[in-house]
Length: 220
Image 1 (spheres, one colour):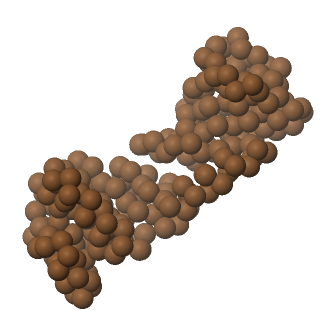
Image 2 (cartoon, one colour):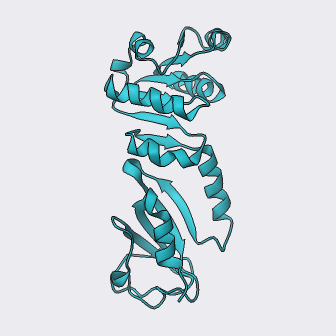
Image 3 (cartoon, helix red, strand yellow):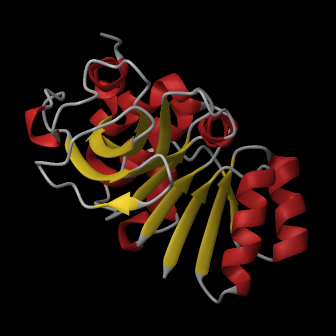
């Protein structure tokens, strides 16, 4: 697999190192000349000094034949532009962007970036899983702007006592399953009646998170 990495900082360097050791063909584009020299000294001639947002630079490194482009600079805007150039100019089949501000994740998705990685979101998700009273926990972000979330039904919620088939959820939201208060997973049977303490696992658009939280946790 041929992989182009935009950004030779700590993230880009260690990604390149691991991928090279896994026998992938890797090319790193790093704008800082001294950093480029450091990478070349350690990993060999797999780095080009230049601006990875520029189509001319991506063309020089053969992005048109890349299987994957990873944009992992410290600037969200640069990562977005680099992925868009790869996607729309060179038809790279898969692009991955590092996101430093989680609020940018939705716009990256809407602009066609295949996959985004936010360290902030990952850490927050882990923290939320440790908070027993937190009503909505993002479990996994999927392609095309969807995510899998777990919503805990509080005691006294409007939906408590209602069957799954009668729930009014945000558009394009699908119940994947229910975990009862004892921790037993159950299939999403339309006749299954919700109770306080149940956790509902839902696939939903990222932008529907707040509406989903309200629909399942609002008190009667």
